[in-house]
Image (tube, rainbow, N blue to C red; front, top):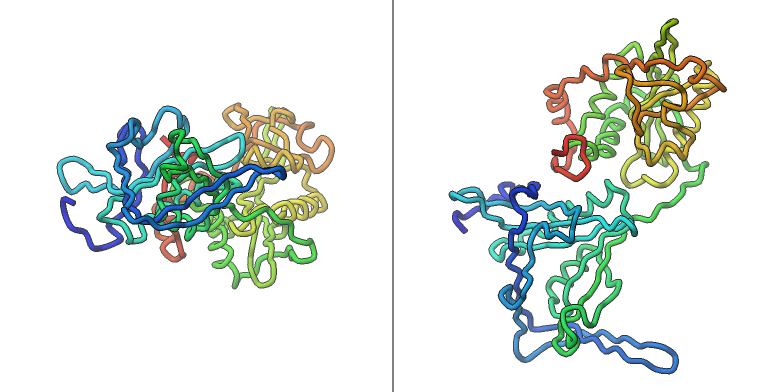
Length: 407
């Protein structure tokens, strides 16, 4: 190490850009006095696999030099890889001290941890846990069903670490590295971490109601938790909610929160917007944010909020809603891209995230025109947002693939 560091806060986990770190060798190596013995046999009833942990008289050591293809960041076969790490920039040249790399396996909706390495001087300081937390957060933000990785049957320290992180053995490969992997005591172990399974909550257990002034801070904390690092590093949606309540366009009579027990688990906020054509203007609705606390996502809370408030809006005489939202979510709830209604943005554009829904037949399509969003949504101060955010519990700001400010 070029300089001794003792303050954990100095070991910041940062994104490792591909253009800078592609091809960086990770010097994987370990020594162990134990391994998992794999005994695979076949009988008339099928196959029998027995895996037993054993000790050895002579330590097993593996070094990077024994491999023809050392571990590297951003290898070509991981086309959508994304990496983070800890960099020592005290000397003349940045030096990598720890790294984790992930790549989505799109067809199975899983996230693969392709590399995880910590310099021996930094081990047993919780850095591996912090790196794995980044991968788990990416999986949650991308709604992956599992995080998977591979390790070796003789790397018992790594296996113990993954088990402590909630990973389970999901499979093995007895000839991944050679045709004698079992004899060499280096069988590929596949391990998986399963994110919380989607579960529906009974309608009777979800209370949809207006928020109360004394709950404002709790609601804003939930909004922050839902959006943190999702579309950008950090977020400003909690600040938007705080400021929106003060605006003339805000519609508290339509906005609602979702409560399960004593916990605020979701919220939707409505405001006025306009359509404009050559003949005039028409008042319609927009909403945002609509969000659900991370631990309750996938349980039907957002759908309940939307269903009940759209009914309220229709009963109040509004004829349509236009939003900027997630194309993978809203169409299954009845939303269509705005080109279906003859509506464009103020600049005359259309795109997948620009959607609407009619509350009465022809409520949008009979008017069409250009969508005029309130100036308020473009006027939020980032400096004020940063000051406001200091009053909340926040995880670290982190760069993830797919963020709007991704370069």
